[in-house]
Amino acid sequence: MKKILIGFIAGALFATTGTVMADSEFFNKVTATVRSDYTFEVEGEKVSVGRAPLVYNGASYVPLRELARIMDKKVDFYDGVIRIYTALDDADAELERLRNNVQLANTNLEKMQKIISEADAGLRDLTYEERAVIENAIVDYQDAIDFNERMIEKLLKQIPDLAE
Image (cartoon, rainbow, N blue to C red; front, side, top):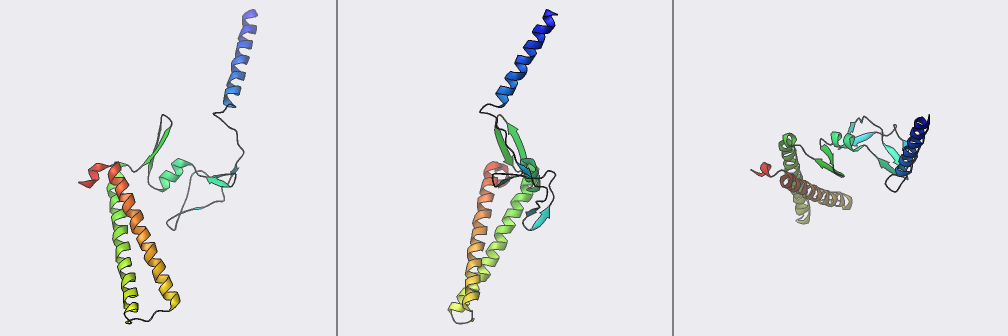
């Protein structure tokens, strides 16, 4: 009987110790709202997710593996570090896609710059609004080029074999 009582007390102590540790500075209990009514779009295309996002303190939280799957990335977790990366088998296709984006943006940028040049030379009439739209498009295309070139640089740094 004594052994059972000692075992019970020891078990109770271990159980409460675990509860105290779980409520320590490493773990905080929060109340969040599951928003299964949220939808996702990636580059204008609706995509489905396996798990609904959470909303907490005005911010939305998406399960990282779901987000990585949608973005065709891989996720690893090791020793407290979450790593998101492009798998080597997907890297060639990703590099080609990024380079095509740069080429398309450059083509469109040249077209917009040509229209502005023609308007400046008096060869084309543009309203103030048309000119503003074209000038904004020029900025957007340049931003797209810069972004895609940065992504290419990151990909080549991550997987140097692609540069060959």
